[in-house]
Image (spheres, protein in one colour):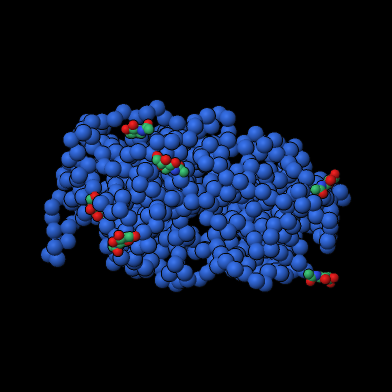
Length: 618
Ligand SMILES: *[C@@H]1O[C@H](CO)[C@@H](O)[C@H](O)[C@H]1NC(C)=O
Ligand SMILES: *[C@@H]1O[C@H](CO)[C@@H](O)[C@H](O)[C@H]1NC(C)=O
Ligand SMILES: *[C@@H]1O[C@H](CO)[C@@H](O)[C@H](O)[C@H]1NC(C)=O
Ligand SMILES: *[C@@H]1O[C@H](CO)[C@@H](O)[C@H](O)[C@H]1NC(C)=O
Ligand SMILES: *[C@@H]1O[C@H](CO)[C@@H](O)[C@H](O)[C@H]1NC(C)=O
Ligand SMILES: *[C@@H]1O[C@H](CO)[C@@H](O)[C@H](O)[C@H]1NC(C)=O
Ligand SMILES: CC(=O)N[C@H]1CO[C@H](CO)[C@@H](O)[C@@H]1O
């Protein structure tokens, strides 16, 4: 009897102990926490052994983030409306019931957080009069807007291909839409950049106006759209341009951010300044806070190392808060995001239709990239600061070897090599970095996009550093395991296709897209810093390195990699994209967006709402 009791007590204590230690461990370990700069071990064998690789930790932390997100899923109207009120602080917009039915009919997974971007984009509009936004939209020329009347898209003459895709998208939901004017940005680059102080004032108005009104005070349908009011031409949207895009952009950063007071760079000679070894927002060098790692307000060095700031192709922007819809923007822009036009057609340059690549095991264990040298207008004086050029150079074995042999400093024309051992790289100690890159990477430009234009793919000032490679269709690229995805003149239009492929996207960007709150780094894709400082660490973690062993076929055998982790992320990304980034999901997003947009443009907006789920309950 007492012996059994004793055993039970010991067992209990053991359980208690286990619970306490796991809680303490979970509590103490937070990959997002701002840590002091870690110690840099000059030699790998000084590093404490048997610690999990930082990427292992980031991967398991990503799984937890995902579990928390998905636990918020709602499946009926009641719960969905309730989650809305909790997160947004007001009633859902008129039309919410039809929206929910549409989402259900299309098997959409509903998590209120998936729509956060809509509120980030639209909330500032509560700070300016509804009629002003409405008039501004009305005054946009026909060819730059989509007009919906009586449940039908009115656009007939369509000149641009992008417009055709977006019209197709809106047609998919036109029967559910109130009358509305949707101005569309047909340029690559975002257009609206409102100073932070103004946006702050506007969102304060929104916050103060939040209210879950008593049911009897709520108006359930939007006001009739004025047929032909006298339009005040002075409300017309005006765009201008500034020579230094950065100096306009940083005004949209919060006053306490590092970029706010940093003037634009004017000397773009040579490589950008060396990147931090363990950049901010990373865990032992690897991206841990993706939202922060891609935000130019938090990384002033981007002003001189990303084409969007060095020299964008077009700089037509406004500082006024006006409604302009587009496929991507910088975090500091105030454009309203919709899914990008190139995500809509079933097959195009940016996707390979139904082909998503073969089985992981059948792919080459290597990195593939093809593309044009875009990113902005690269010139002889500043091409060394462009992100695509930098990436292509950094994984070119010959360029890296030349840099290592450079007697002055370990640098190439457009990059400075960092001591790669700090990223737990061991390949460099076994084999020469250049040789290793030759074995695992096939990356190159198909067109050098010279300025002034040469009329062909070559370019006198970059020819010495880059080979012009043949184009390669996406389905051939899918025969390789690793797919870097880099910003061009704006975001990269292949991203969705890459996610949906059976290969693994390695993503670096400064752009925001509609789907950002749906994708989790290290779970659905691999994030990279825009400096690419940790690219060798990432490649070594996944691919491993060669000890000189070759197969019978003469292929180099890689050891010490994490092929299974790579396969898993590739497949998780694919399955998730097939669940929440389908065309149906885009429509569900755009319908929600347009219902909100219509409400915020309505003079009665303060009282408009959906309360169908509450009626008869009070
Ligand atoms: C990421 O960084 C931003 C900016 O420092 C911060 O506001 C945010 O809370 C961080 N996110 C996480 C998940 O730690
Ligand atoms: C917008 O409405 C306000 C009253 O709510 C009015 O004073 C103002 O003139 C209107 N502005 C425009 C551009 O029509
Ligand atoms: C929409 O319907 C109304 C009423 O049926 C009609 O008066 C109006 O002309 C229609 N507008 C368009 C653009 O079709
Ligand atoms: C620009 O920077 C380069 C390299 O740092 C330097 O050699 C050159 O003198 C600078 N030019 C000007 C005009 O400051
Ligand atoms: C490309 O065009 C330039 C002149 O614009 C010419 O000098 C050069 O030979 C051409 N290169 C090729 C590979 O055709
Ligand atoms: C790699 O770098 C070397 C030396 O700069 C250059 O000649 C070669 O064309 C580059 N290869 C590619 C694929 O760009
Ligand atoms: C628009 C812009 O920034 N262009 C710059 C590219 O680099 C050269 C040389 O540094 C500058 O003179 C240009 O102004």
